[in-house]
Length: 147
Image (tube, rainbow, N blue to C red; front, top):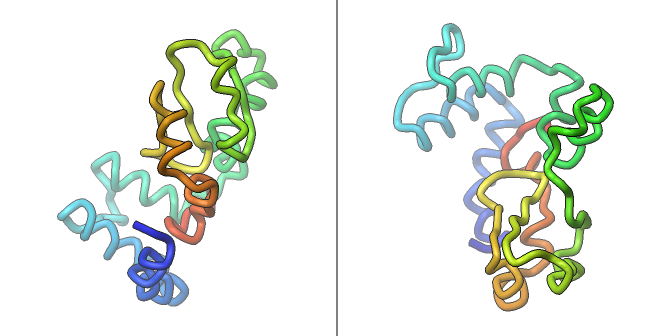
């Protein structure tokens, strides 16, 4: 889905969010999960995550939700040995040094999920992806202060 279509579809939700973040979250949750969001007594993991997004604004949360920035925090805690070796970091997927990467690797973006790519990433990026599709602002899309 291109950005224009996505923005048109999300416009009513963005308006609702500006008036009531809780109501917008409950509606999106119902549409995606198929059941009502219980924020007063969350039981499922999904409900608890939504509660955290709305009410728990721990200043450490944005750092820990970012796959790249959390590495710095882990090092500060003296646990650097737990980190997987980082092969490359950057913002432009066209600059990924595919020739220098091992046969098997995973590309992960720091700003969301479902964007992970494996060995076929080079072909995918060259033929199908524009940079602005990878590097986007999830605050606008997901309303999560974490990003």
